[in-house]
Length: 294
Ligand code: C2E
Ligand code: MG
Ligand code: MG
Ligand code: MG
Image 1 (cartoon, rainbow, N blue to C red):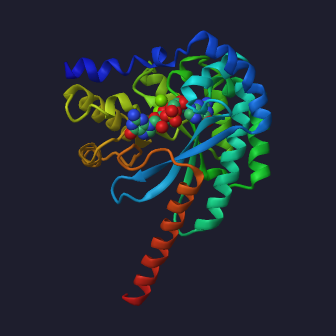
Image 2: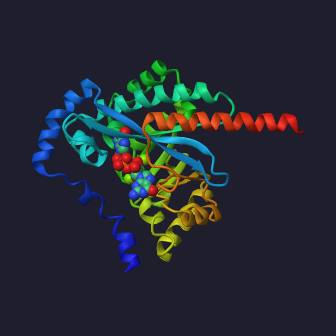
Image 3: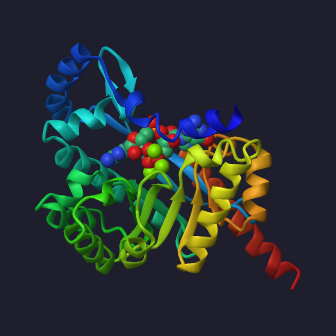
């Protein structure tokens, strides 16, 4: 029972994303205008280091601040943007906004502590001929240190073109972006393919993390992904950490980084800013304590 419950959620993704046809039609016509009017907004979900529970960065997650409907989640409109050729424009807005924000945080934390920002990249963005021009422009306009930017590509997206996609990722990585595979474990990447992909880390899908305390099979999958990632020298991130028990268990399994409702939900910019300020203050306080008592 727990097993069925736990793992059917890994496959329910496309059903959840199906939106009623009339709403789709309406959103479709609203979207182009919304991009021009800047009606989208990024939320920032904290990413923590599991061994000391310190903030190491954020993942940028888009929402549509719709005039009539309020905040619309990405699962409702990203597929519509993809189908209507709007994803490249929307993605360009995301990367520009994210790079700009990271530049501000970069200035604030200085060399005191590393902080990075993850951005989700849709498959259509990755194969778009303008992808490099747009990203280079976002980097130049913001002045952000590219090494603080991570790009997340889903494992499913990588099931496409076996030549073009690795080539694109390699070129992005050569620019200094870190590449993470998102929702890892739900796609079908073969080990040989994974080994040849130019990547820096794996994000373990939430559908394995959430049930890991009551479903031994899910726990075994999480443990296996961590072992695989370590063997390939990759950073490991757990998504969907909703309770302390899972956080502690992931720590014991030597997963390095985590995000989830147990730590924080995706936050509006003011709340994310406050966390960065608190981090800077605690790092400064620690440095002061060290000089006082050598
Ligand atoms: P994702 O990249 O795998 O992001 C994680 C999703 O899980 C986010 O949903 C986040 O709010 C949610 N989440 C985080 N921690 C927990 C938890 O502990 N429990 C539960 N139940 N959920 C948690 P969100 O923001 O609705 O985004 C959904 C998906 O939409 C993202 O999945 C990503 O694939 C896509 N997306 C979001 N923003 C962007 C974007 O700017 N560009 C593109 N191309 N895709 C985006
Ligand atoms: Mg992601
Ligand atoms: Mg994910
Ligand atoms: Mg996901």
